[in-house]
Length: 98
Image 1 (cartoon, rainbow, N blue to C red):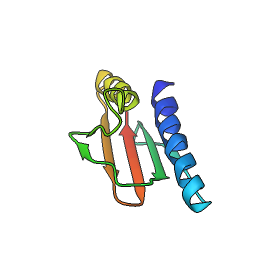
Image 2 (tube, rainbow, N blue to C red):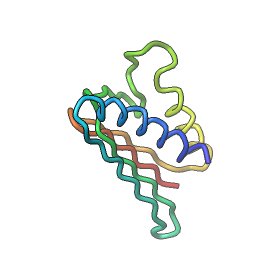
Image 3 (tube, rainbow, N blue to C red):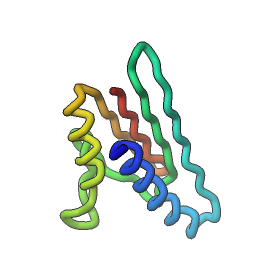
Image 4 (cartoon, rainbow, N blue to C red):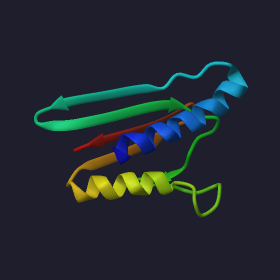
């Protein structure tokens, strides 16, 4: 499943960076079905705040940064779902509802 794979890949990649800096990183994953809708929520620590605009990450790594999330957004749109991204100095959060 492209949704879960991309979200987890991103969370793992960033958590590895945090782990090197602080020695501790935890990824929170929540999957549930509520009112006939599937909800994916993933939270992971970040080394720095990620700038998000229109549910897209503003790139700091060049043209390929955020491609996985664009793929997630395409699947969400295809199935009429919603996606919300947020980030502060400590944590990135993605919630997908299908």
